[in-house]
Length: 305
Image (tube, rainbow, N blue to C red; front, side):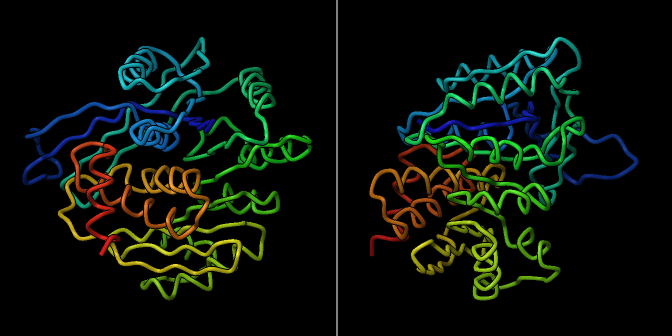
């Protein structure tokens, strides 16, 4: 079973605004409301790919009720903890204006609720995979991901852990040897104080993350493609599959889901890398997160030549 953790889920209000003008009244030409958060997106795509998954996280207020309703409609199994106070966040994403987003803060998470989540994760076994993804509410300690991994690492039957996070949230988990980390090239460059503009430039810095403890490093680079440095010493570099980008929201999360689905299917890192890239691209080419048919079509076109 793959468990995903979204500590700060959202209701994503996705809009298009033609000729956006600051300081003026703008009207939408397209609207869509979807449950969001990186962990949830991973679960949605895994579900589409036929992989069993359970989503964990916190919900609060009327927005939390709507998120829960929309997640249930997808068929994804979820075990949300309900907060008595506060309200889950709403994120506005202006999809036609260079990826412009306005993200909410999210509710305050009481320490007792955090403890409840940690106790739930204690039941995970070595055959399970735990995905820690995305930002955290300001009320949570910045060490929460490393705290989770430290706690799990003390178990004889600890699950494998995937981390998709930025800055110290990512840096602090490396000592606990996550099976996969997935920074994008901007985030990878930020960790080392450099600017990465090509796939080849990403490789040595991905290898540095390996040296610091990550088993596998998958670097997403948007239209430039992706890079994988695997734990056997393999290095895979690929351009992005060709297609028209419609909505890049969730593309990186889709890549994580595709990679995990591919790895579980064949235990082959090259195949997992290509399926991950196909899944990320298929979501970018779609109005919504990719279906299995869309992923298969991109995979066949890009990697079955």
